[in-house]
Length: 328
Image 1: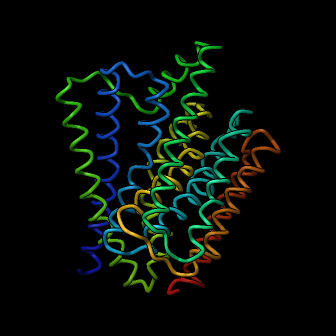
Image 2: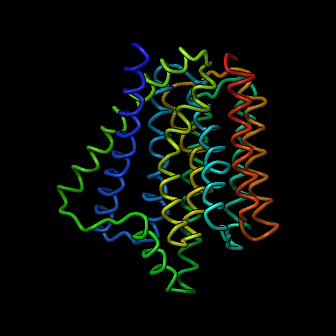
């Protein structure tokens, strides 16, 4: 495959991933509404996982190809891009306020699950058993979040109405016939599979012609491409002054990437990685997560100055990857 065709593959694959994720979420939300599932559960599961669907699909495709560096590099790179690139740009548009509950629960959980990756990475292989453990942890976290949120709604019923309105702000889903919902779900899943494979083929060719290792391909080309849905969602939320959606999407997506994406890819095929992904790049991801949390704790928001710092950190990280570790 020549470079021009590879670029076409990458662009077409990414567009297919994004649209397929939209179809999947739209169909699933409509289907869940018909089953009488509450907006709370829909928001915390289907909509929340929608923007992580491209990462899941891309890492599964990488696992099938036995390219563990791309699968795990995609997780790291997406997590760093979410906080430093997307979070930084959104904060530059307008400061992002952070609720006390997010500071006490979601942000510490984000850092904790990132740290929990290290024992699995230490031997440079994520086994199927470890993948299952991550998925069990993910399911338990979702269940606890839903249970805790239901308790909050019992005390303040208006919370569910607010959540429904917030979901509609960034994910407008009109009622659909049952068969349409099922077609959207099936089409979305098929589109994710095809889009992930096309994206991966294009990214690998472009990366190899540029002299990049599989780890750097995953950390940059694949990660940034699959993080664009988070960028779009958060930019819309920022312009509409929906800070809870912005911060929830960023933090939630990182938790989902670490547990859901890593777990699913590991179950599909054991992931062998190079030492760098258990070393420098891993600790950069953890450090960015910790710095983001500290910034939020200090000011109860991510300010424009914080946003500028985060964006500069991301630019510096990309320069580091391309200038010093491209072939490593």
